[in-house]
Length: 339
Image (cartoon, rainbow, N blue to C red; front, side, top):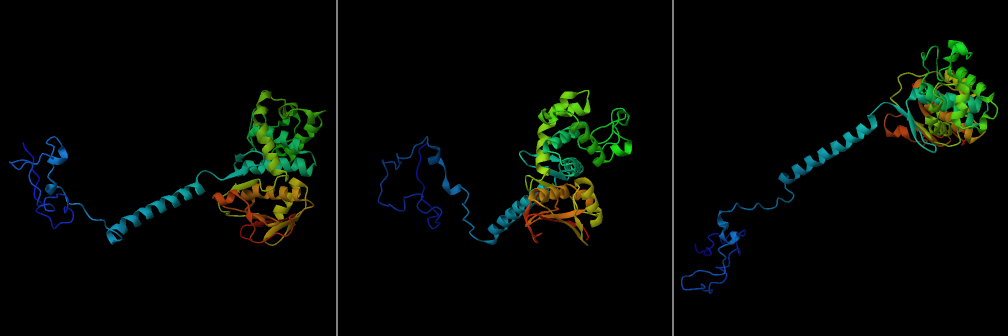
């Protein structure tokens, strides 16, 4: 059928004003005697569309309440999602301790405390070189996953799965981390040329395991944990912990530091202080305190003007500027919960 432009009955409506130009050019004549406009393509679907029957376009709402409400709601949802995500990051998973010197490994607070005891008995109490601690830590990871087990193959026990029947001591001695670590180091240092041996080879010389190749799997972890704990690399030990419910007394913490490191700290009314002869020793004691924070109820550890604070979230995984300095770079302050 032929197509004809319609006169706009809504010329006053700005939405349609000018859409059809008949009222703008009244002098224009039809293309032929019948009044048909041949500019209209009968096969063009747009030309066939009756715009007067189309839905009216809504005008922009600007800064009206109707527009602001959805925006505010979207912002609130986005903000809630962001804080929910942050909360998830802060509380996801179990409490952990991280070691980041020349690598990165994570262990539970229990495992971290045992690793610190092993390293400190070797490098500070016995005065051995870090390589001895690397061998000991790699061995304990292999044998017990750094847990002080009360069971094992046959009569094997403790951090190193030592056997009373093989002359490693009584059950009570083997289950004492300090004594079992000391026994391990005594066996290790009795081996000629152990310093030149690969870590896994030296470990097998001490343990005489039925699976001698297993120690090689944990050499890297032994090296990273030792480097993080022996004080040579500051700020490389952190723990994300739940809030402390109880704590040891300052005197009890001083006793444990002396037993495991051979160093003498001082007990105050609410904290423990230690003045080291070197920054290495200061950071070694600080690392011991951070890894033992869960067991002893320690809430903060300060070395000079740097501080680790007990926190379940990501703030527990970093050292920050101290709110109250401990003094010099060789001064350590250990604060206990409820003290």
